[in-house]
Image 1 (cartoon, one colour):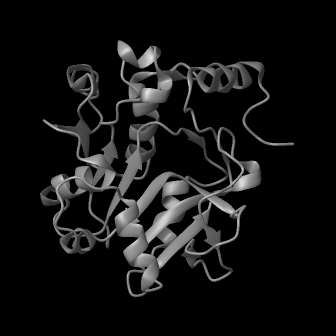
Image 2: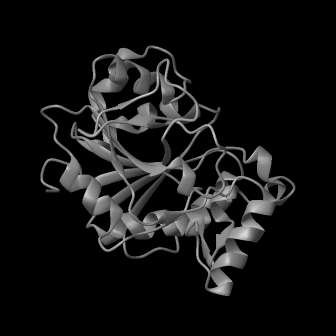
Image 3: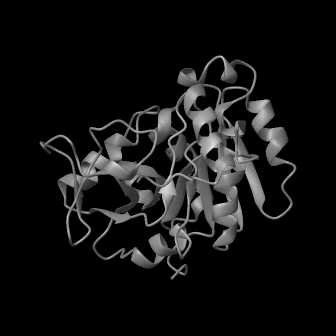
Length: 244
């Protein structure tokens, strides 16, 4: 199932982490620890676990710390791209396209840890991927079960896996939780240098090629210092991130 995907993946780690201040004034958000491990390492572990051999990590805020931390990993090749200006999520991915060999690739956020169900979620997402009908596939969580998110949700998920949000009623049934598979040609359609990945999703949704897979584990959107404390408290207590 991995044959159609690039053996190089991407982790987005260039954000300013403004909502996490003052913690992120001295340490970038991806290097904040959840369960005794940095959120960047959580993302790297997921990719290594499914056989990814190279990971491109973009960095901007406190980039030298990201690069130094990445250099300590010996189980995967890590290429750190230091952005000289903020390119946003879509621009950051577009800037890294030469590394993926023209094949669809995994892209993960470095700041939203999750706990897998019975099977690794990225393995499930790779098995779900059907390039003949999909241009992008997102890992989604039911809004009601997603910790650290607002109540509005991001997307509606249809029984056939199709995802949409344009004119969708609120609350939307699912939120996106940091992992996706994307076709590289999608970024050829955008001329801007800095842009949000929402531009890509909107275009893919418009041609009914945006799909999603429901996560069968747990997740925590660590967006604020308070979220970080609570996520760690729940893990340390043994309660975990499940929602009763």
